[in-house]
Structure formats: structure tokens, C-alpha cells
Amino acid sequence: MNEIEQYISIMLSEGAGKIILSNPAKDAEYKKIVAEKKESGYQLSKYTDTQVFHENTSPSDTLARLCLLTDGRYRQVNGFSDSGEHILLISKKGKCNYRLKKQGGGEKSSSGSSSHTGSSCSLSHNRKKNYILEEGTVIEPLVDMGVFTRDGQVINAKYDKFKQINRFIEILDDEISKRNAKQLNVIDFGCGKSYLTFVVYYYLTKIRGMEVKMIGLDLKEDVIRKCNASAEKYGYDGLHFELGDINGYTAPFDVDMVITLHACDTATDFALFNAIQWKAKMIFSVPCCQHELNAQMKPENLTILSEYGILQERFAAIATDAIRGNLLTWCGYKTQLLEFIDFEHTPKNILIRAVRREIIPQAVRDKAIGEVEGLMKEFAFDPTLYRLLKGSDSNL
Image (cartoon, rainbow, N blue to C red; front, side, top):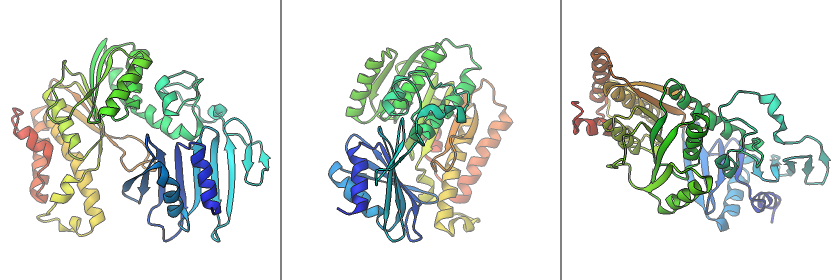
């Protein structure tokens, strides 16, 4: 076992929830690679300047795969476990310098020396901000996520995740705080493991004091089973998870709010279509993997935008969400496209916030749909959400 393998093996044996390969060599294919622990093995997210590619590894393959990706390509490896931050620095000649920055105390190097640098969450005075989800408050889903300690303090390695979650809650709160509603019915499409679903439920019921009926919907039976068990564990009586497809789902109540986070490609369109059909008062959507229009794109005049693959891909993704925003406006929503989190953390950083209005001026609606159809004509686009609305009773 060489030195790189030895130290990455330590990180894995310590149960590191996240391992980051960074400081790439000139010939490295990716800017960084982030390995996150899942129920079985790790998911690797490999980042270029504009894209992220995913790969899953089994427990038996993870060590070999990380060592292969690291050796000669990356000069820094950071692993985050309950014991602290593992830091591995690799010189150009392959010499390793390893140290462990402990959660509550000093820093231990591979040679056994230590220094009192610390990595505990007592650093909160250096990052003071009035978050809606406050440090010092025990929020069980955040504890289970590994974002909070048992006493409600943010784990330093998870501070970016804490900010991201708070940013999403702030975007919700901007709208919900304007309302006097005491009750709220919520659908969360593609809820996945649903930690954010739990946090939203906590915010609505514990912070806002609302009576909430909330359904999380996903296609994975084991995920639904575990999420329902967690809801029971937390005592979240108004939160329930169901097995089902976004396409054609029938809600059991009048829907006030729809959430859809990272529903892949056209799954976002089906979620938005359902929300429109239900006349949901609020929609919060973070789209993901906008492939549809990239495959269709054939410019009539602006061929410069398809001349270079990377530019075509970026333009098609932007056009996808611009069309979604305009179609929501046409359907009676005041629509905003907001930056969800800083771009450095993820390329999937756009959030669509749409709030239903009783009156959207006809001139505004006409302009919105005219821009969509003009874009479709120029680039031969045939977007899913447009087709769905055209085939419904939305008078498109």
C-alpha cells in the first residue's frame, strides 16, 4: 500500500462523509472531484468549468478508484469525518504530507506532531449572520444530515451546506412572510432522501407556526419507506411520503405550494405543468440537467450559437429556463429566476420562484408567450412544458 492509498484508506475507515480531490495538475480532466458517502458506496461528482459528471462506486471499489483518480492528477485531498478534517497534500514528486484537524481540539500530523489550531464550531463569531435556521437550535434533520452536532452547532466542514439550506429557506420566507395563511398544503416532487423536505416542514410548522399537510413524492420505494420512518421519528405528523411519478400525479388536496429540486431534464417541466394545472399559489423549482433543447437546437439565423458545443450547451440550458419562466408568466405567475447559491459551489444554481397573481396584464402575458414562440422558431425548439400546456385547457 503506497502513501496515497494509506491516507485515503484512513479517511474511508473513519467514515468520511465527503472526500474532495483538488489542486489539479495541468493535464487533469476535471477541476475537482467530490466523493459523497451514500447508502452503498460513494457518489463521485467530477467538475469541469461548466459541467458535472456523476459516477457511483461500491464500498469495495471506492478506495482503488479514489487512489487511481488522485495519483499524479491532484495534489490535495480533504476528507471530512466525525473525527475532523483529514488533509493530504501531495508534492509534484509524489511525497505526502498528512494531518488531521480534529473537531474539538488540536491538529495531528502523520509524524505525530500537533498544534492547537482547532476546527470546532466555536468559530461562529467570525461568521455571524442572522439565519432563519439558527445555530444552537437542535433541528433533528440537520443533525441526521451531519450538518449540526447533537447540541445544534454547525459542523465546520458542512458550513457551506448550512448556508445553502438557509438560502433556500430565505427564498421561501420572502414570499410566505407576506401572507397571513395559517394552513398550507405542499407537494415536493422528486424528494429523494428528503432532508430538505424535512427542513422545510420544520420551518413552516415550528418557525412559522403553520398547520401543514405535505407530501414528498419519489420513484424509489426504499427511499419512501425510510422517509416515512424518519417523519414518524421526528413527530412530523403532517408530512407523508408516497411512491409515484411526477407525470400525471393526482394531489389529494388543493395545492398551495409546489417544490421541485433537481428534477432531471423534462421532469421539471412535468412538475411545473402539474403546479400550473392545480393553480398552486407558489412554485419553487431548482432545475437540473437541461438536455432537451440542446438536442433539438438548429438555429435559423444565429448559427454562431451552435458553432461551439460548449456554448450551445450553455445557451440551451439558459433558454430552457427562460422559456419556463415566460410560460409561467403567461399562465398567471409573477416569475423570478434567482441565484440559489454561489456558482463556485455548483453549476446548478438557478431557482425559479413563481407566485400566482389574480391579474397579470394581458400585454405582459402576450409579450411573454411571443418571446417564447420567437425563440422556438429561431432555434427549432419544441419544449415539453409548451407542448403540455398547448395540449391542456390553458388556451395556449
